[in-house]
Length: 385
Image 1 (spheres, rainbow, N blue to C red):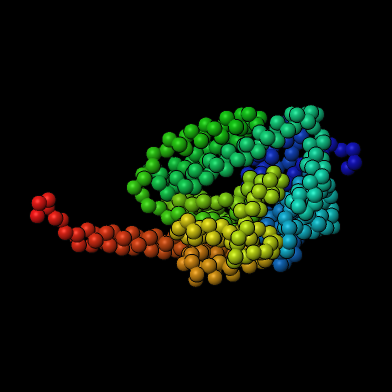
Image 2 (cartoon, helix red, strand yellow):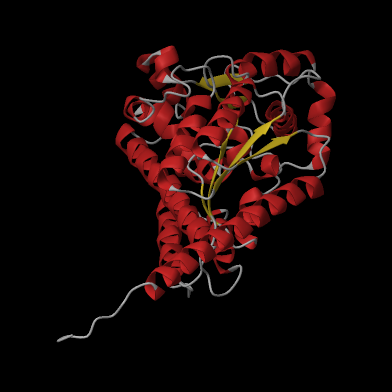
């Protein structure tokens, strides 16, 4: 494959296929996007994967087999650090796919802390080596794509928070879906950014009912399960349909910031974590830090999601158990595997939301009754008496 034109591909991870297509198209580089994740794809991935490996791996290997059939020859893979298996995915995927005749070039995007800034830049430069664009144009495209990612994620953040207040159910979800539909057809970064700005204006005009008091939750956990909708059974859409106001900080842009743009600045936010003072691999320390933040800011609860067998998040789950006792933090842990039915997950989430809603109503009633009792106890003294 030495002199062939590079045909890039990468596994489905949230919106990476949307922004990746726009960026590489801008540079004139061909990109192969595998079909969306499906149950049949997961079954295919499971059939060639080690039994004990987690769902993200099985989905990724399925994506790459499909991409190879579509002509892809170079894989871009994210990586991570410590005991998290994602750090070894590249080597294991290569071994499994090579044995089955799926030959690829591999480009691993690891943290600059792990491989050094120079090596990371060399790997990034290889991805655009086929482009006829000059360095200034490539840098402009990179910046535009970064702004695109951030703009789309800010739109999601607004939608997630407003979903609990929207006057017309489903209005926020409709706008984010329309935006992604337009991005899938956008012919340039400029066109994509215009679409993002237009949908930001639309979501700002959604009628809301501020008299509502929806639950305020945090969704956190293992990065792939957080970013890829299929891996968490479209939990974000479910929470929006239930009228919950929630936040999700672990995103594709968050990973780019933490790994490539300014990893040291984000590290500072994790200092002072007495529950998990050490890096144990993956992003478990971030998960625990998110829980601490929720406790301090008075969130109604936390939903932690991760695939079965995820070692760092299992540790974070144990830490959450201690925090639940000490800080009265309500946490629902949802662990996904390929054998679980979607109905079971939905039932657990609905029960958790229902429990928190009842508790919130009781607390509000108690506050109201206490205020009324206090007011009745006051004696009004008229002037001159």
